Image (tube, rainbow over all chains, first blue to last red; front, top):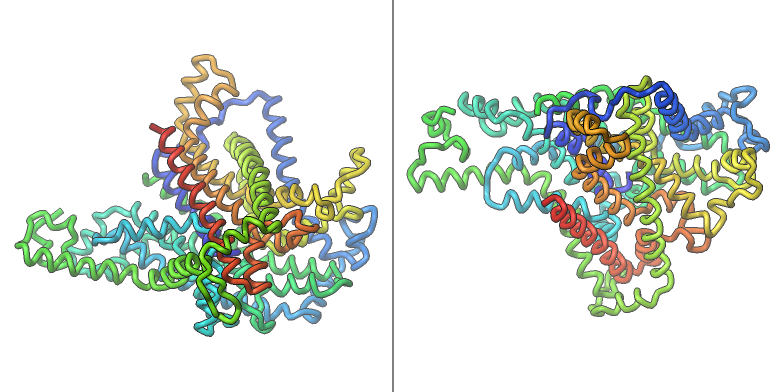
Length: 308
Length: 316
């Protein structure tokens, strides 16, 4: 992930979906699904197959290349599937690079950022969604407005600010950079507004404070939204390249993206098969998280759609 | 809603206080409510304000100074902007950004809308495909850039091998060629983004009431007419959102280009964000880089506002 604004864009997705989903009772796959004639159906499947190949071929090629010998990667004609799988690449990459350090750093950053983002984001969202006080709407407009402001435009003053505070070249810089985005607030607010007011009203009658309502009522009810927010924040931080590039100069602090990039640019005789093994390792956790979380994610979206 | 209970709990929200308490009491309550409201927002706002709002304000100051690496800054008025006007690299970066956007925006809308329409049909394997389509979007830029760089390799890259196999004698040099580097970058960014926009559009498609299609069919509309007269108008709110996001994302394109081409060959893929990065972080001309950043900032804001009003006018 490159920056806050892009993260905001990413996060917009569930929010947007939910809003769209709740605006009208969503007929499951109803619209436009006409009875196709057999010829049309076949055409559709052909298109689907072509698109699937186009989408997945680069990944297939990456994984296959990670199992080749160094020479096979560039052999002409192209070897799509290596004759023997060189699993040794997956052993060597750990000794020939600092993969372990990079993964540890990235994991630490991604977990810290996700935790802080969910905590401060959902807390602020409650203020925006359920409290009424002067200045609230203007402030929220400012939050939303920053969606249109690219991070690239203010990365320099931000860098100077953080350098003056002596946090550049520490993990703090990345944590601060990623953890307080407007996107978490936006997503959680969208979701909170789908939770019936009567629930918090009842809790208020039982003597719960606003903080209590947030903790005991809103948090448990918003688990689907928290899941999507955590998933997206984690993936974004894991994938972020620009933030670490600007702030983390000490190789001991490098994230996996910086590490792998340095692996490419350092060596003219880069063993590309090894590099591909490294890339595959870096993509696997994201793939797993995505596949596991996807179901939860889609369910969260579907239920909120039905609620509306 | 029980009105009597509100005073008992003491934390009446405006919604709960149907029976108005005495004036003094009410203003005290309101102040208390405001305090509680702010206390919710404050933890996030401290970070957000300090790391986003303050830097944006500083940016507009820096753009008018000659701030350099020693932190010394003198007010230079609009000198930085005048320099931008005469700077050949800036012109290249500016037009390249627009060129990239002009290719990327329509292509991505067309492809992701096509995919969304396809996936809105009752076909087997649609669920699998939805997952697959989204996967490039959550893959890291570094992995994408490295893999596609080699796929595009002119002599031993799979893409040109396939092109030769289907009879194209002289396939393009892609990232090594001045003309083809930008289209190559656009292909990769479209491949990466289409799953994201497809999901947004698919959600939009699923809100289109089925009855409208049936009514159109009864009136004898063919598939194309149904698409133009039913699907597109119903998709307009989604389309608006998609276009705004896509435009901003195109204007600020950076990391993919940085890893894939580093602006090259020559300056063929140099874009605004990279110009800012080079002037700021590589040449330490913070003031001058900030003036270019102001241009990028205004470009995004202005286009968003224009699209916002255009959308508003058309929906009246």
